[in-house]
Length: 493
Image 1 (cartoon, one colour):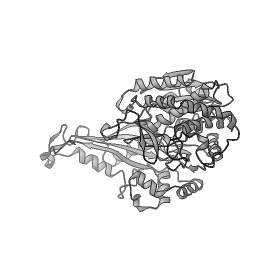
Image 2 (cartoon, rainbow, N blue to C red; image 1 turned 90 degrees about the vertical axis):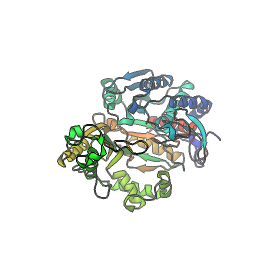
Image 3 (cartoon, rainbow, N blue to C red; image 1 turned 30 degrees about the vertical axis):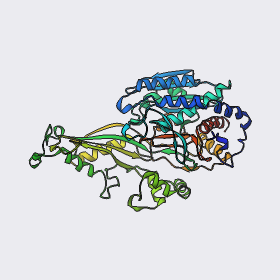
């Protein structure tokens, strides 16, 4: 399999006008350092760092700091928070423009029994239709793309050059639990002062679909994650310890109490949020956003999307266009997990004293995390469920960046010169804490960038393409080159 760089992804790809000759040595250096960069990524994946389990977090933070120093960052500091620490770093290249960079060093939990190869082995395997991929937790979310960004800095530095822009860097170790303490990192006086010098913030990503298509998102939904707990002790009804299930005849059930409460959160269709006041401030899509979705529906493959998700129908049997409009614009109430009583093999006839549900609520522009939490608590209290504990474990507001921002225009111009016509998209249905940059007091545009492909975030067998079988999809070297190209484009635009 040939390693493909950014400028040879498509047959139409030609010369990047302002920097082609200057970047030929960078491409050669990336190729030269391929094995070194892939091994760096493998070693990173092999270090578990799971905030939800407080597993490997100190080691993960220390490794993050070493990776930054090795890539040329001079100021690298651990930033204590009320939770897991963050990292702040700077790289002064003496350039006229400064760009912010956001990383996360934590990853989601795993069940090794569900994986084809151990999630911490970082195995290199052949994946039909895709090529050679690396499999492991964090491969695409986000260690693969982040390692590509660092590899671009290594290549530039290896030539005795400085990056074309100054860099201000932050990383957090709690993204996968809703970033509850990330504002403490960004709003620290030294960090905030450095970010005020930035013209934009970027988060490395793997933006390509398996067919090579690229989507540029202008934002993301917000989210809150909460746990609802029903207990006999707090309720004042039902048992304070598990009892024999025959007592259901004369004792109230905290588990049914929770189910009844959950049932009030959605309409009878089992889908539409019914929390009082939850979506009152939700902003409808603008005409410009609707036009983006129409164009995206025309250019994206519905059958491929259904296959990827393992579904045959969209909710209410809506068509492809409406399904995409819902994905972009609809606030949601989702049950992540529901646990109460005995769940092991066979039966165990108990009446549980406690039941819990984990929820996530996705938010669209003009909604806020605190507003959603307040609405949920008030809704439950109004309906007689005020005894149910509502524990918010993390969350943040939606984020939006205008298409006119330099971080977005640089992506569009760079991709189009390379023969790639990107899809412009109003916002991701997933979430990231970009609001700390795009909202007050910083008010800095922020976006994702990076070629390459990966999938399986939060799922078994997460992967990231290293050597691509499709000439339209960048392999690892191409992803690294795209990061280098983007830095030069940001310097020039």
